[in-house]
Image (tube, rainbow, N blue to C red):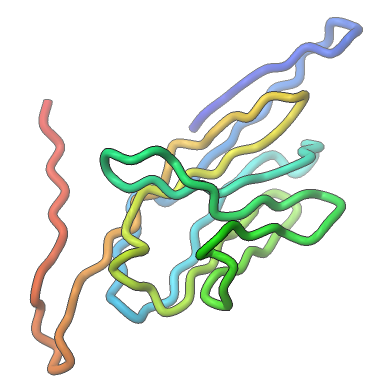
Length: 145
């Protein structure tokens, strides 16, 4: 969970908790997945973002969802495979027919008072299967301390 505070011109403090409940999502190629970004429902957020980051690469924008307009999907994400939906306290990124190329960490972010703050990220891993159902390869995640 990521927390941040902002001061208004009167010196009041606003705090928000931004979270991505699923830190790891495992899918099979062809599955549909939904990633969730949660924030307080009484919180007035102007824009929410989703970014995709592959290992060793910079984060790349997926979608910008503003409170007053339709979402804007960037480049290859402007496809029927990607869509967003909102509730009072969450923004969901839906990915249809998951591909191996979708494998990455997805970060949500919010824009509030001219500052973008990011969540902790959700790692989407994709198992690769052949047409007869046998595993051809599997991504393994190792954490070393």
